Amino acid sequence: MSVIRLGRDQAEYRIPDSTIPLPEESKVLSDVESHDRAQTGRTWLLDMSGEARWNAQQYRNRLALQGWVNVGRQPDYLSVGTGAAQGKAFAMQRGKNSIDASFSDRDGRTVAVINATRNR
Image (cartoon, rainbow, N blue to C red; front, side, top):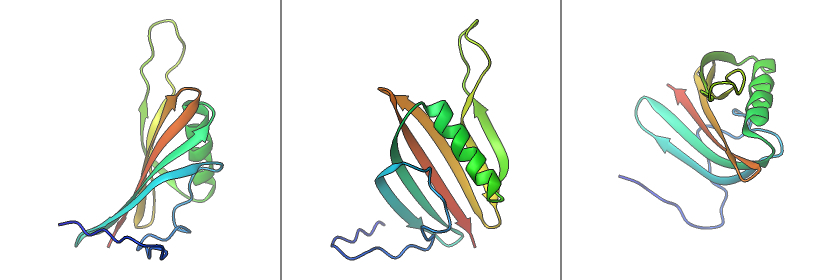
C-alpha cells in the first residue's frame, strides 16, 4: 500500500535532511521516503554538473570526513587499454544509517541516485 500526500506543506521525514548530506551543488529532482517495520528508506534523484567519476569521488571523500565508513564499492569495468577502473557506485555506513550511491554520466552532467536507509 502506498500513501501520497499532495499539497504545499513541507513533508516531515523520519530521515531528516540534516542526517544525510547530499552532494554539494546538486539539484534534487526527486525525494521519496518509505517506511516498514524494520527500517526507513529515503531515495534522492539528483542532477549536477561535471563528470560522474569526479562527483562520486568528491561525495565519498565528504562522507568519509564526516565519519562515514566505506562498506562496499563497485568499480566500472573499462575497455582494455583505457586505464584503471574508477568506481562510481559505493555504500557507506555511520551508526544506524547507511547510504548506497550511484553516479552516472549524462550529456556532460551527472545523474546520481542516493538511497539512505535507517535500521531501527
